Length: 359
Image 1: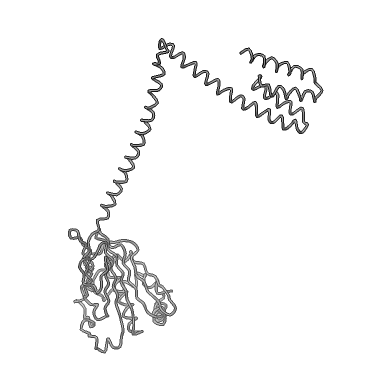
Image 2: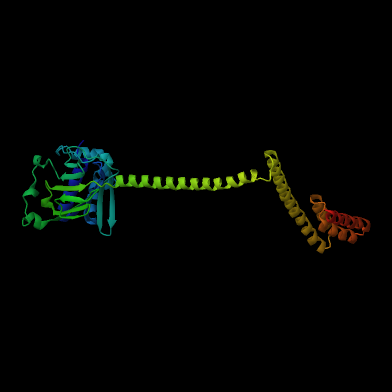
């Protein structure tokens, strides 16, 4: 595969340099522990005048924009006819081109779309050696096939005096960098800054530790699982202990000496449960009856005696011996002129009271 990426960069770079006399190029690279590159981006910064000239050149070739021309396979094929056979460090299909404008300046951005492994022979390698990751990028590794005038140019030459160009290379490694030929190194990041004449056959080298955080992360997860499991076990055990503490009390009740046999103990236990059940049932019925009585009282105050009578009857349906409801029913019957029925309510109240006295 021809060097679509590098050749287009070279064309843009030389064109910008010759037309403006100044250019700034930057490379951003980020390496992964698995010998791949997480991302790679190259930018060329120039002014709007130069970009407009390049845009006009694209339009004379029949393209609507610089982006269309750069991404057109025909342009790449024509441009690489007389170029060398150097391969790009990633597939052209993985390249994305964009532009960023800031007032009078424009940044032409070439970057990878997703992580990739460098193509063999591209001059860019990411290899693992034991617990270290080696990053090495030799710029224009096959430049011996072509004449490179920048290689023999010094800072005092007419070339450098006429043109101003700078190259900034930024690298981020997965771990702390322990060896590099960079201008500056900070933890896992390295930077190179050079002029155009220093770029040919330049080597960008860095050696970093491979972080052990994945192992620590796994250990941490395992530890959390163990802690949660232990807490769950202790909670279940505690609940079982509480349950077991209740069992001896029931056993003591069954084995109480006052019972002469197991049959007597079971019979007494069932009677107690039946009594408790009846008591609970009576409380529920009393609560419901009281609710109807209170509704009847509210309606009675509004002198709606028929509806009040209905509420008291509801209460007595639930609890026939409810003397409060009988008393209020009698009062309503008097208001309705039904004195005989009121006397019956009074008689029932007396029977209930007498029955309770005998008990």
